[in-house]
Image 1: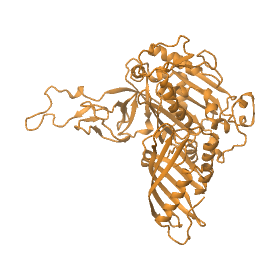
Image 2 (image 1 turned 180 degrees about the horizontal axis):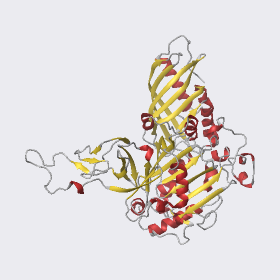
Image 3 (image 1 turned 90 degrees about the vertical axis):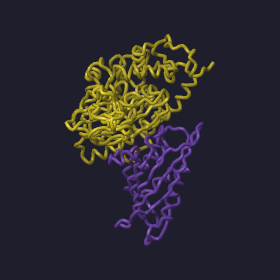
Image 4 (image 1 turned 135 degrees about the vertical axis):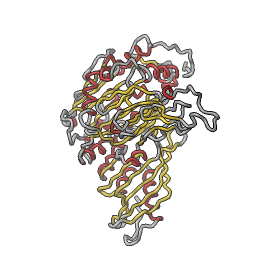
Length: 416
Length: 165
């Protein structure tokens, strides 16, 4: 019998089969959602908050850690700070614009003023007016700064944490992620190309799983196989890291694949040999700027998916907006020394991924329709058996090993 | 398809511009996507960009087409590849203005747009609201767009953006 999502009688214990089953209540239960935020985003993790090219010295940008709005500031001497975008006085939102220049940060409500490091510098009528009112004599400004997060940087990327216990960022990321992150953000000064922001009516984990799911890629995104960008019979690695916390996938673009057929390609209904893009620059490696022929994506738990398609470089930042909603902020970037040709290629190839992306628009479409169905049967279980029952790395797209590895990690952290 | 026609020697008046915009909207509202590229010149730039990027001088646009070939490719991708739930779109274009006649006889124009999207099981919703900033030129008896920037005011795109604006 179907049960409502409010029904607390559903037993909150993981199916006995283990990670080859995922219980549907984890996608809607508000208590689970609250515990995820505490355990992950506000717990022992490093959260991506932005890129250094987004903030000028003496400026700020807004970002989010979990559901909480934060400010990423950069002082004139280049130091980066991350603090809650919440006045220490009464909790008002401090910065109302997404980015800007600022000498200091003044709350619009009662004009409490903070420096870019988050320290309370002053407040009006500290001593009252005409001998009346004012703060108590023992009010200590140094104890009423903004809530500051610890900050770490790697190349042009900026990370923040509430935790005092989380390992240093480099250890948290690990050598495989560092190699892939450095390749994109540490070798040359970055240039901000722009944002796409997208709101998706689904639990954040449905999106998290989706980008760990190479099985769906050539089936639900016909564009990929139709135009020969990615094929299930090409080389592909699906590699979980740190016992499921992070992951990367990796493929080598093979222009010859388009002209071949195989047993696998015959199973994909979408492969067409009669369709061609008129503008080939959108789907080809015109400028191989990394000289390694590599294409792929990686996830850094719990905030970002980093993806490269040819010269389109983009970070998807997953921002939680409640159990049934998440925002994706897509930050497209390039390099300060990009020439005209590469600048144009980045713009053209960004048609591939984003809210209108040729190979990504189906994801949000699918997940927004999936959420109410999942919520209608919290007692149901997902079947995660493609590629066997294991959580080890595999060299195929026909696997759900990365999802199993994620839930192996998730269960340990959440005590489920 | 119907494209507003007029004598090339006459200044573009607001009513003719309105007709042109309405023809454009009609093409999309009636799902005649195959005719869509014909509204543009061969070298046309077409982009849909959030106001956030536009105001900050950031170039990224979720849909960016450099040339009619890319506009055509977008249509083919929608028709032959993209998977999306059934929808009806209605464009409401208001306040068309001819801002300037350029030296080569083409025009800088603008208008507001509002697009209402109807999906199954939910009430119609505003998909997007914003402004067109255009450069339009005469091509024989026809008007064609050589540059269209659709600046959307929405902070976020709701779920997906499939059909051009």
